Length: 254
Image 1 (cartoon, rainbow, N blue to C red):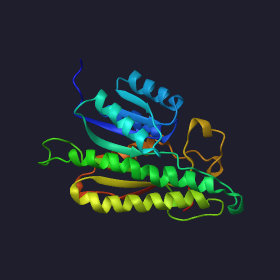
Image 2: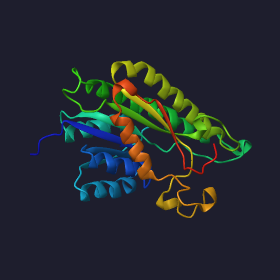
Image 3: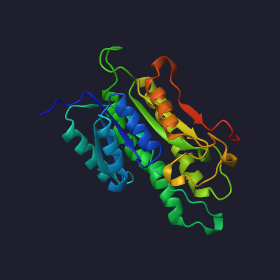
């Protein structure tokens, strides 16, 4: 039986964009990655890509808005990699996006935005923060090379509500507030909590036909570039933590 790895990373929300890029990059940099998503169809291509590149990945169908589902996912991780400690946790769950006039929104639209945007992060953080605290080095540089990290994928809607974005903004505002509170409570204990505001259209395979910034080259955000920024956040020394990072194409208006 192969030895269990000393550390691993976990990524929630693995499709063809940011989550997949983050999983591939963190695996290339040496972490076995646990991938959590609702559907096997989203997990399988990413697990296969990580494995084909020589990395290690474990795909677990999970509903992050359901605490029991999350508990089962982390039990599966512990059974697969016994004794491995959590080095990096990335919360990239789809946040109940509904682009509608306010009077056409339903209570279910609001529930979906809060369930994944805020409640899902709440449940995920309650299960990952104890593990991240356990990975804080007792002596600088003796155990873990980089500070244990929780990164949350946010959006411009976390900063301002726009027309037709009422429920999405409500979920993202709540998510950002939660991330800020976590950073203030657990940063002093050695856990780096960072919130990434993604301001622009992400260049995903399913969105190839969507025009952004008049179709200019690099007018969409590369998910691989987002992943590189997330890796940078993870590797920041504790003397210079970034809590909030915003990413946008060079031509994006802001």
